[in-house]
Image (cartoon, rainbow, N blue to C red):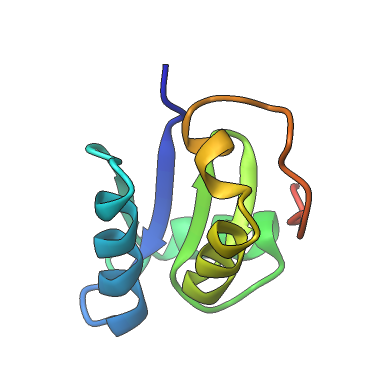
Length: 99
């Protein structure tokens, strides 16, 4: 079973496009995208949950990954695949704030 992936995004966001492409290259077929440029209350939700104002903000399951560079760093550390596969173990590294 694979973990759900959620990404806060905007229409014009090069790092969002890169993050989506990167996730797809890792076998992720479904990404729930929340367009914060079209839905200001969702932007506020994103900022409250993550403590960040920039996009993308990516979640794998219930874990806040951060942005594109955080996603790539997690993969380089060998901790992205276990998260994407729904495995809770072996995922050390940057923990995001949850609200």
